[in-house]
Image 1 (cartoon, rainbow, N blue to C red):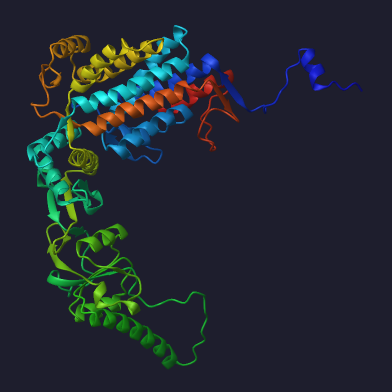
Image 2 (image 1 turned 30 degrees about the horizontal axis):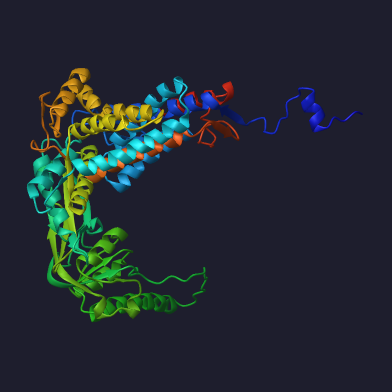
Length: 559
């Protein structure tokens, strides 16, 4: 038998197979096309939701649950996306949500437009490295320009903060009642704002709790100083409210203690059985007596309360609630300044909190208010579960942007004004950039103008005419000229109350540029199997065609 060495086989033109048969590889231009197509598909899927006139998406998961929303990050998280590049773009939305609270659709849309324009540059044989450098330079310059354009705001200006909240909520199912909700949001942020040692405003949203209720109008939403417990008293003979009460937060069941191991006991006499029952009753009496000895007036218990214990607590005149959520107890511990007790035997009066517990029989809620409570609760009401869910998403975004504005102290004109101004300034900056990077900077400027174009399209306006009018206004020196999507006019959007936080815009531009650069830097995709990220029984990747089929299969599951 003749054995050929590796070098002999290569000399004879036989390929060396170093990857498994199931592996896939996409190289060079095919890899770039694959990645750019995947990223743009994600951006296209959320673009129609941008702005006050954006449309909603209905998302139905594998279990049949329906979500109706136009919140960018919610859409991307709920979609069944089965593509590695697409998931990288979703990270842009998640980062934007975590860092700024709003602007997720803007960030993803700009990232998609950057890659679209980069594709045109690649067709002109401009190397990805030059494009990446140009995008990075443009991103850094854009941040500087945003800081220059941003208006320093007085964080005590409630009208401005309400405008920020209304701008964030517009088009998110809160249109009719946005003024009322904006007032609640601004007041809620004020309640949880403190000054640090250096005199800066710090908004601690951990002390803000959001509760929802269906069956009522959005206009009946309210802000409460303290917490809400959506539970009933465990016994009908208990008091339903307690003013100036000592409150015990308990993370221990008021039930008969069970042994850790299974035990069988042979009973030969009925009296022996009665002794067991008497001992169980004594255990429950002891637990209730421990609570009574602490002089507790109200008990919020995370675990269960035995029926007999409920009877004894009612006899002691103690209001008790069982199966309270852990998150509610943690919030109440801040509201009434109480410790969460895990062992009744070691509890002391110092562990108790102090406050008022009031019962709302109509809504079947307990309102818990503490003395000088730092925590507040925003009670959102809506007609149906879908309405309330979308309302909560919109309010959460508005809370984040108002908090950012209070902490950061800078704001910008909305309605596409900042994007058009940035694009104009970046084109001027491009003239000072040498080499092919200049084309990338200009492409970056063009990409930013996607925002006013899409705002116009979603409002049923002509995007070309709108962009021409906006450019003309900014060339005349009107830095805050933006689009009024309701009238189609170009106006000073800052004075009109369309205001956005500067930090959110900085984060959107930075995240979009970094995501685009990350995608452009990839020139080779090597996969151990198909290019699907779902390795379950349901194979998402399509067979054949060297991995490009995986794009169709994976993205087909998304679109």
